[in-house]
Length: 511
Image 1 (cartoon, one colour):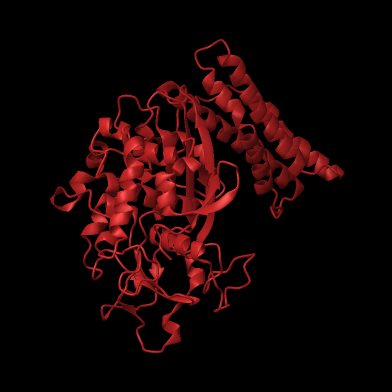
Image 2: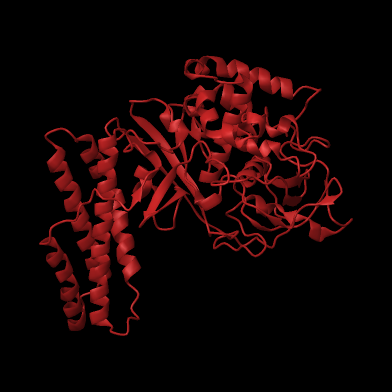
């Protein structure tokens, strides 16, 4: 299996059909493919791989002028790069190479000879499958040691695990005769369930090109954190580390785009692998944020805390979109994703996604992803500020609904054993998300005669959605339920007559 020239990447072609493409095909003939056909963590891992190869092949772009020429230069530069590193002298892209297996540790051996317990099932490569003590609802083969995977799944799982593996205890295979650590740190892309953001182009070639950052931008982010100012580095496959102490690559841009966070050795035809910790990668705040992530500030009294904008269970990405984009910080130092600086002043389409992990644990709880069209008006300070204020308004209405449901529940069951609150909130937020276009219409109407009418339509929908959710979740079949329902309903009518709070005051101020 040659990772550079054999097809293994799931893509959607211009006819709308799914097929497998090679790394070379995506980077040199990307106009033939509309999009990737993968899950959120696989998309992030693949995009980082594409960008790593692109930067290494171009040895740039060094400034904005070179960035503008990337679409013309990239296909030929990538073709030459992949051919060079795939020749007889280098030969670094073979998945099962005896001496240089791609993105794996060649000199990895079990701690004990002929000890089957030293090997890990290949199910570990897929976060959605049961493996060890990690069970899933729809996977019943976690204990099946003979489970097999096709080559496409193997490579996708390999790069995903290198980017998204979580901290915790691991087996300890020998790396050059030395046991790997028994406790691993997070890989670069999983910390705090950080959101990853990519611009979306009209095809894969366009998508890759517009997400490439020039060296002027990247040096501002990374130069101060790398030894001797060598912030760029080279892809890890060009010079594989000999042990876990060769950590210079963990501080470089290209070294982190395709990380070697886990010492893995795959065996052709086998259902198991060797698996341990490899290099340790510092993450934010001990190291600058990844280029496609955003950092915000949470203020509490007189304290300020910087944090990576990340996913949380039950909260969809659109509710944190202002923190991700940060267009409402004119004149301030922003820490939004660097690739969002591109196509300045133009409407853009973006993809936002993350793996939601149990904080401090190995458990992956969920994955989230969304696509958004960001209009020119949204990319202005005023547009982003209005969006943030209206999201706060939606959250205020959610609290009103929660209070109404609480009143209903207390009057229905004073012992507080009725569990209906979360159901109402879920119904409300689902309805609001379905009608998110009303908010986007309001943002686009800022500065026109439609500003006030579109705002009224959006807010009317919020209150209507809250009342509908209340009616669905809180029954009225019995006299007792009817009395409790009426008590809760009063919360909506009482609050309606009160003056609204200043929705422009947000709890979180973006860095």
